[in-house]
Image 1 (tube, rainbow, N blue to C red):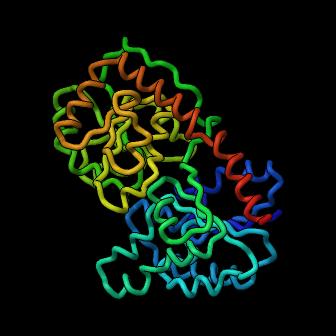
Image 2: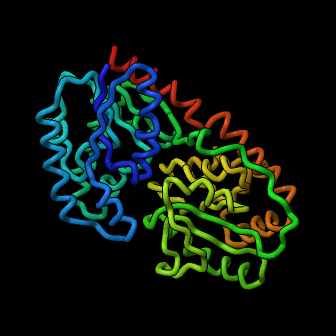
Image 3: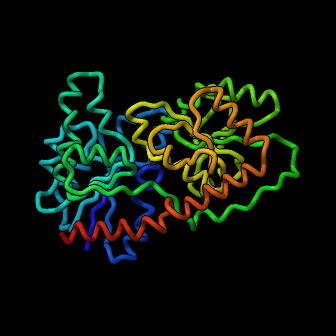
Length: 356
């Protein structure tokens, strides 16, 4: 069996890495031969992290993807990250996809809202129905959470499966309980993410400054230049090799969000990372966060600035509570949110769809 995987990015792109690349060993172990073709280059991804869109890379990417679709070798299945040709009309994409090869769509974000909720009526009219049409033609839709799955069902999907975005336990060793004897510096409240989602931190800047100036906490962010965004946080560079140890140095993990349609489609991956490292969580009660975070068990779900301050103050003051919640989170990851659970399931799904 041979599968063509059409990702949006290479390994540096978080969504492509976690939804596709980390599954390659599991697919190969199941006897599946795989070819991966990313749309955008690593140079383009690096630019996005600096807040730049390299137009030259975009111009080069689309002809290469079209050429790949037109000159495709025989495959048993095509597995697509969201869509093959973003921002192009659906009829073009459907015309280029081979008619005799079934395809699978994978969603870990509500990208369909870029179109159907767009403020420009021309884009909304031209592209609003693109994803529902692609979904109706798919042999399988793999959704990262229930919000995305429900959109696929309402669009007329033939087969929908929820597969959360997960971590690999082999990369996240069992956390060691932290010592409370070192009081030389305040406990660290940390966040990991990309520039595109760093705006969710901005409303909490006054709280971060208050807790920092009082010596109650220090704040850190992995993956962004916090100073450029005027955030009172230490900036920690992201690399695939160091992200786990960087997260493990936190004492508390946070994930603020706004309650908007696109955010309800997020898969809460940073929460899974925090929990895998044995950290308690403070997060906004939006979308899948409400499933991942069990309020009072492995973290707190908080809405108002007052609730955020109370939750952080409570965790910062109680090391036993931090450890209990961290252990509960790790256990939940081992049970539900690791590739050791989802890897065999996904490989089986793809084999079944290709065979059907």
